[in-house]
Length: 222
Image (cartoon, rainbow, N blue to C red; front, side, top):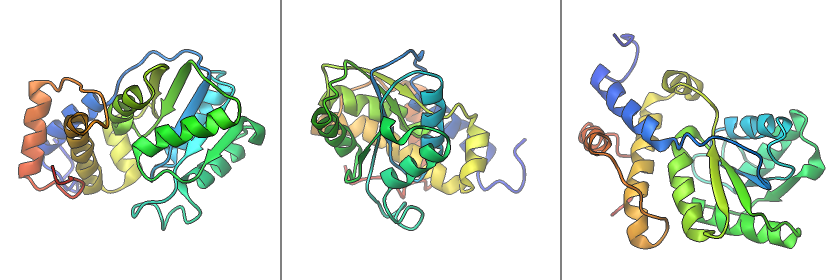
């Protein structure tokens, strides 16, 4: 049984876990030309990017992201700037990192990173996207739409769902984000922002259930 101190019910946990698993692409990692660390509130993206750099998976790492309402207080100088500093603290050479400090959404993360890489003379054939665990699928769908001529792989910190909940410290926020990202996976292809992906029936049912339960703060008007 779930701990009484947890804010979600047993059923809500199982519904959220279904969506959590769906969001992760489970790609088998191999060396790529470049990695893109997608900015967010989760500094674990920078940590895992550094680990993958040290594992020899890519020679060039770009951090992308300005600020959003959820990150301005934590990363006042911008997501990419703070991610870069953290990666350097973890031993990634400064000269291996390219900064893209302006992107305000995932589409801009991809398009602006592509422009900055081209300006630096980097024209990759394979790209590794490093993101929050529940953002893998959406970032993959976005990149495949906006950068169709490169091979896209996805990675995130290898955390179990409960461990991620503990690391963030706010169950309501995490479930809201899981639901919000799934809505974008479903709706963004209709707007031309991403490729379409099949959503299994049980994941759709979990999504509808959590919306009924009020995990809606990250939903967009659709």
